[in-house]
Structure formats: structure tokens, C-alpha cells
Length: 116
Length: 111
Image 1 (cartoon, chains in turn green, purple):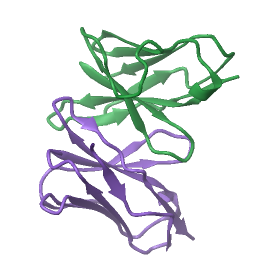
Image 2 (cartoon, chains in turn brown, purple):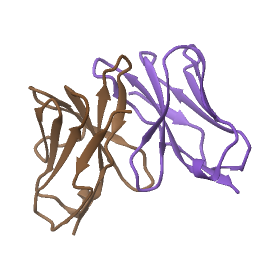
Image 3 (cartoon, one colour):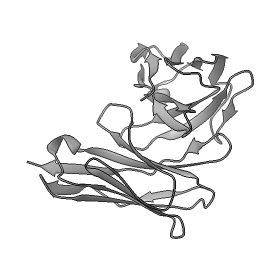
């Protein structure tokens, strides 16, 4: 299947700092990418849809000024958690649909964020 | 609001048995349906996709879709301990093909 990478895989930061997470589609182009957040023992919750060349679309309840999304190219989307707080600690996962006729979404390996 | 309901777990089956996972969805506009497997601490891994009513088989996995009943299921034959994971049902809809995830069913295959 298609490959999506994320970097970093794990990050620990102090409260108040900003953290940038990168999501790359390695062998295909993605005009759309999705960012999810998963808390322990819970399912994935869609945070936002990242659109190449235009603004991201945020889900209800997700602060767009806190979670900055930039779809810089057809293979790269970044999520920046600004002024992170302990309640932002979570597993952040991106996905990209592979438009090989099926629009199947492939997930990156995820980024574990811990805010102290 | 789009809702996806999965059979409550955890589900335990003995090795070699058939595991049956069920899912209902509320959005009649859903066009594609996916089953993902997620191991603890890892991201979801695609297991099966199904787009039309009926059955679709891939190795030990069979997905079943009934759009009229808004129901999709996953059967795992000859279950192995390595199948122990949380299984997520995810219909997609909308122009951006967004996925809506169920809460997942935790499966344990006992040796």
C-alpha cells in the first residue's frame, strides 16, 4: 500500500512551547490530508482536513489558532500545536487518501506528544 | 451528526475460531467502508475496504456490506493470536472522503 510518514514519532515538551509535526506522503501526491487525535482508550477523532493551496477545514470544537495546519506541497502537511498544555498530550495521526481509484486512506505511524 | 456504532467488546475467541465484528452507521451518504486494525500504541492499519453490497473476501478476512440496513461486518476466519487488536469500522462520505470512526472493538484471540 501507499506510504505515509510522520516526524517526529515522539516528542516531549514543556508547557507553553510550540510543537511542529510533519506528515509526508512518500510515493504519491495528496491534495488532501487529514489530522486526527486519539486519547488513551478512545477512538480517532478528526481534527481537521488539510488542503493543498487553501486553508484547512477544522472540525467543530477544534481551535484553529491553536492547531495551525499548513499544506506546503502535494506531499507535505504540517500541524503545529501552539502554546501546548498538558491537556494537549495525545497521539496525533495523519492520513492521506491514495487516489488510485479507491480513495483509500493510509495512515502515518503517529506522533506521541507529551506536554509537561 | 454522523454516528458509527460497533459491537461492544472486548471480544475473546479461541485460536482457530471465527471472530465476527459488526458495525452500523447513520450516514446514508456513506460511499466507501473500511476496516482498520490498530495495535496498542500504533496507528491504524488498513485491513479491508468494501464499496458495494455483498461480500468481499481477502484471505482470512471477509467484509460484508448491506447499505439498506446500514450495516457492515468483518469476519476473521482461523483467528490467530496475532489478530488480537482493536478493530475500527470507518465509513467515508463527503467530497473530501472523510472517515468517521467507530469506537472500535477490542479482539483477543486466546492461544
